[in-house]
Length: 349
Image (cartoon, rainbow, N blue to C red):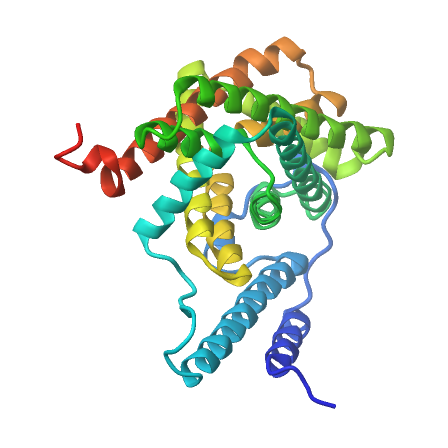
């Protein structure tokens, strides 16, 4: 009988995750009334929260990353001891290698049959919907405090992109950069881009609506999840068209960087870290993601938000989609091609 080399790290992490929250002082009871509470933003930002469940969630996340780092360190040390012979032991690819992988991926997406693109996009939308539902159910039923809910949503929602990128799923937001890179490198045409974007967008909508329908049928849009869905949708539809476009640009800039970091990483723990932080960042700041909104906006309508389908399209989904496309095609796609590809080569105009 032989223990896994990472076993002591797992034991330590679980001990910290379950023991640390118990050391906090007794906290007053909280009631599930959103209007009665004010944000404790400064206290939370300084590293403290009155909600023990938040402390446990954050401690567990920190322990998880410690375990992942420890396992990677052990793997790296074992590889170094084995000597320099054999395949590369690098756990992160270079920027040039990463860019070339995205160029190759654009060619793959260009030649993919439309049914496969639709299926991958449908699954991608479903993953986004499931992560959104998880975030609503957990975050909406914690302490009904805005900073707590947003922190939990930011911690849980990145699960969707990890599932998408490790299973071959596709999102319109990520493809907006990948297909644009294919055009800049003369691997794809504008027709190829429009075809892929359209199929991916429709597939994402269908996948998200499926999870919305499942949640509504099973009665999951109740209690704190219902209140959070309504509050979130009302806020998302309150900004101007221009503001929402800019939020969409900033969001997909971070999302495409998450895809970039995930592509660079060569192992699962590295991909997890690469995805988690940019996605948590855009959620915590309050930027807008079109595919996430394909789930959140209908969820708000099903939960009783006083809006129409026309309202969520005009006030949010259309401007967010425009912003996401601009970020993917120009901010990230053109930027990476200028740094590592054809646009930055003086001898290839």
